[in-house]
Length: 465
Image 1 (cartoon, helix red, strand yellow):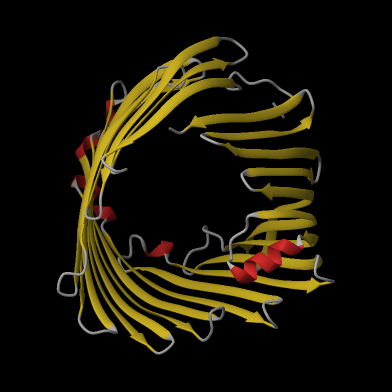
Image 2 (spheres, rainbow, N blue to C red):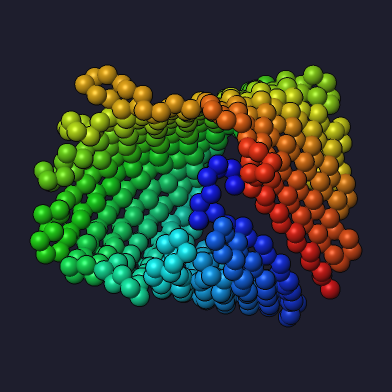
């Protein structure tokens, strides 16, 4: 492990698996089963187990069903899952689309504290959804969707953590197309209820959201998207906790701008989000705050000739949070900038083939890059910003990728320079198709020293008949 000290939670996992998949009824009915032998090692013990996965599915144009069963009996990893899903859809009957989906999941899992079993949990989840769309005119359509979700979580030992959760969501949306633009109006009605066994607590919420938005496209590459939303959330608590009942109003604005200039050699993406959370009840009004989020990604490319190009890409992110009426919750921000400079060798066949079909069958691609990342966060105290943390990361990488017919190889060594340490990583991927055999292999060592390296290795061999 990269850490100098050994923890009892450190572990080494080896798995050897075998599986098969068969299809019937003209590839409509599928059966897939895998089994693997698992060996788990940590500094104190060694454990063995068997992992099995089985899935049966059926699909045609209007109907889909799936049954699955998964079991892992390895100590410290012990869990089992099973579930079923059924979905059906009706397409374009008198300008109408409709779909129904039902799903059930069961997940049982042991939880451990170090090497000692602490508890066992069982979660059951039921989901049902109905979606109906009607095309009023060629440019105007209406959609209504209802989704219900019920989740039950039980523990063998810590009974106070048992809880129930129910959610029901109605969505109404109108879409309108006009020349280069798509515009919509959406109304969401969301109700959920959560019950805790501890002190017989319960909390009910009702939320109403109304959103207006649009997507305006001038060319295939230039896009402007905007959304304006407003929501009202009401929370109701049981018993003595009803003093926490509150109403919250949230207003949000989202803007996304994508531009491409000079035959896509300069690209620009800008996204802005602003939101306000206002609690009407005085008990919670101290949590009133504003949020601003910025995300800007400019990128430029310079072709030296038909084989080589230089590229430069920046990503700037900023998040600001302003608490309006309270002193002990400090205003804060998080900012991050990532800059990448690189040179890339492009096989001529890539460019020619992309122009003709857009599909690559044979190519060789190499690029080298230097990436610099700086992030910081701070809090505001008495009108002065104090920096809590600042981090610089430098990354050097070389990527080589070769694809010919049914052979694909990728090799990418990476070197990380942190403020107080150096770390290296190598990514190797090999994919081959040999007749009816398909081979997928990946090797990924990462660490600060050779004898303290995390090794990830995956080998997958598939035979089709």
